[in-house]
Image (cartoon, helix red, strand yellow):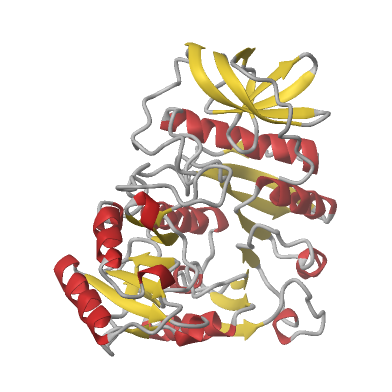
Length: 442
């Protein structure tokens, strides 16, 4: 951390009373007038902690003992919690996690956007373990630690944590972390396999990044491992376009966007929502809130490979889907055709540098749905507002950018009708939400 003083830190254990959680899920305390962020501490607790860093205006610490526990504290389900940096909130009861996330959304809207919703919808929740179907997993052969480490980075550093399992990953992978590591140990290129991309849907694909060419013996070992565990293994020697199946064949990956018989095909490195059941609930709720009717014209921005597009089109609406990635647009178009929906026009466009004369902006729209990345959609907001759709559904993965964009929509003549958090990433501090805006009657 640049600018962080690690020398001359106060030594020993110190006591603090915790009053809140910060946006990273750390406990917040004020000690001698200085804000101190304490990992693994909860509001209402009295804890002992050690200092990790200290600046002029703030400090960071780590709990060493809980003197007075919060009633919301639970035993973390994963034995690696506190070492692995993948989760920040396993010590907080899951129902309280989503309550905190709901409050994060509302606080951001109030503080940043100066906006309040007319209605706060119940948060969407699903299973809090075994939910993660997409992940990038680190791998590193460390002889001093007895072999290959497979998993996520330790908290606050670049070292890989020593994991035996992962409770949040799809159990088809999460329960086989050790088996994967021990298999890599037997390869001649074990020191040249830094990363594994996981995609778990109708079956499980593991994409191994390889910095050296595997030998025939290596390939045979990988093939036997894949057969034993029911995996499909792909190799990635270079960029994404270099990904190839180990045995020359590929098993198509697919999932249902909403729990219906609709199916979306995708490639192992494509972006899809990491939490399958929660994503389906999100799509169903988006259809309820936006309420598209047969004949409606819908503008969908950041459309990906059709997660919302196909369900929108199946309502009988006409959809204009816009996405910046050419590959995703091609797969989105193919998904629409495979699901028998013909009322979708796909466009490739950079929505962070929007062109007012772009073809997709020349029509009128009754409704709009946007699902931007963490950076939000501030660049496209003026053009979206100018189209005057009667309802805009905004799916957000960052409360601060949602709040900023919400302020622009309200200024542009919209009312924030309702908002609710979604627990897409249980046990982490990542906050997703959905907001509905309706145009004021003129």
